[in-house]
Length: 96
Image (spheres, one colour):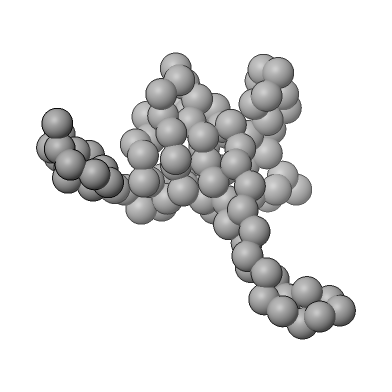
């Protein structure tokens, strides 16, 4: 096995070609104040698989692919199935 970092996150956007935005959340205890701290970071990830919004994916570190992409989707851990009309019902406010 190689020494590349691997993270698990959720796909937030797939509007680019062969690129998805993945949000990785972490929770840790502050070393001095002992309060639970929630943090998250977004990564632009190279996607050859074709992930959808809401999928839980495993990403792996790689050599730079472009100016902002340094990660690649390794595998889809949990797939999110949505119908065409689901996004309108999830949106806040009145339907148009």
